[in-house]
Amino acid sequence: MKTFTFDSPLTSCPLCKNDAIYFLYAINHANPPFTVYKCNSCKFIFMNPPLSHQSEHSLYDEGYYTGSSDYSYYDERKTERYSQYVWNARLQTIQDYVRGGNFLDVGCSFGGFLHAASQLYTPYGIEPSAYSGKYTQQRFGKDAIHIGTLFDHPFKRNFFSVITLIEVLEHMRQPFEALTECYNLCAPDGLLVIQTANMDGLQATIQKDRYGYFLPGHFSYFTKDNLTHTLKKIGFKKIKVFQPVDFGLLPKLMKSKMNFKSIYDYKSWIRIALYHYASKIHAGNCALTSSMVVYAFK
Image 1 (cartoon, rainbow, N blue to C red):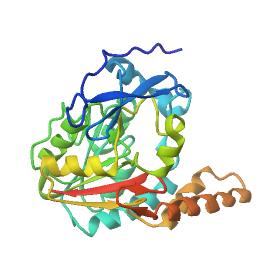
Image 2: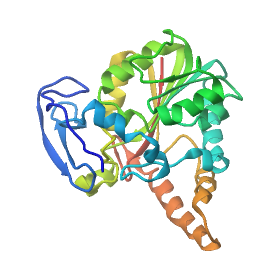
Image 3: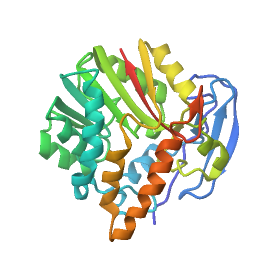
Image 4: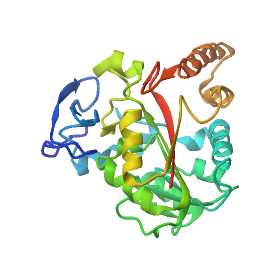
C-alpha cells in the first residue's frame, strides 16, 4: 500500500498569487484524502497542502493504467479503435483554425491522440509517466517525445502551431507558469487547446466536496472566468469556449462502445445524450454541467 506525503501548505493562490485564500472542502472520498482551498480574489480552487513531488510521481506508475491502483485511468492502447472517433472529431475542429505545423500533446500517454494528429501535423509529446512515455518514444522517437514536464522539456520557443492540454491542466500545481510556458512554445497565431472542468458549473457547485473531479492527482480547479482571464493576462489574443466540448454527440456515443459488453449497454446512450445537451445550457460563467473546452489563440 502506497504511503503519501504532502508539502508545506501554500499561503497564496497558485493562479493569481493573491494571499486571500481560505479552506473550502475536505475531500474524504479520495485515497489519499486531501483538502482544497479557494482564492477569494480569482475564485481558483486548489489542493492545499499539495502532494509532495515524490508522491505525485508515484501516482503514475503501471498501476495507474492497469487499474490496480486506487487512483487510476485506463490503458488507451486497448481502446484506440473507439477513442479515434473523439480524437478525429476534435482534430476536425482544430483544422478549422490551424491547418498544419508542429503539434504538441502535453500528457500524451501512449500516443493515441498524437497518432491521429500525425496524419495532419508533425507530432510531439510531453509525458510525465515513464511507463507510458517510453512506449510513446518507441512509437514516435526520443526526439519527439519528452518524458518529463512543461518545465524541463528541450523544445524551442514559438515552435508549435498547436498545443493540447486535454484533461491535463488540472494535474498541474503551477498553473500560471504552465500556461505561460505554453504561450512561449506557441508559434505566432498558434492555438492552445484546453479541456478541464468549469467549477462554476451547476454540477460542481451542487455536489461540492462530493464532486468526482476532486481527485488526488488534480491540483488545480478552474472556472470559465478565471481561466479565460488568466490566458488573456498571459498574452493570448482571442479566447473561444466550447460547452461541453469542441465536437458533437456522435463521437461520444461511438467512443462509449469501448465499455459495452451486451446490447443492453446501449441504454447508456440516453444518459450521455442528456448530459451532452444539458451542457449546452449556459449563460455567462454559469452552466448546467461542468464540462468545457477552451481554445486560446496567440
